[in-house]
Image 1: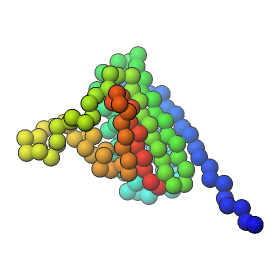
Image 2: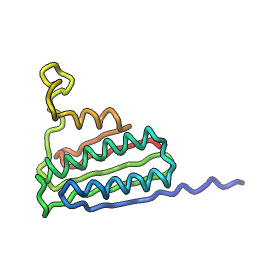
Image 3: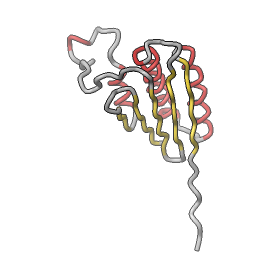
Length: 140
């Protein structure tokens, strides 16, 4: 009987200080994973866009750029999927009652599109009840 190949899973963790420069460490990890798993360009672009948005929001809105607070990024990746979990130390937010960025009165607003974009680019986007943690799934 022939053995099925063993599926390997890699786990990565980043503890990012709450400053915008931390996003560079995240981008480096996304690139490393994309290279190792030969992630298609469109999926790579979606991951980069979503994770940049989520981590930046966690730093600015979640942790209020407090240098004593961290943003924790965990990723579990195998040949089929990458599951990212981003957690900040903030109070969270009500992700169910965000203004619709496509509504006429919001079209010219400079902010307020991040969650909308992330929900459309990731294969799955799930917030915890508090709103200070999000899990993003990307099929590879």
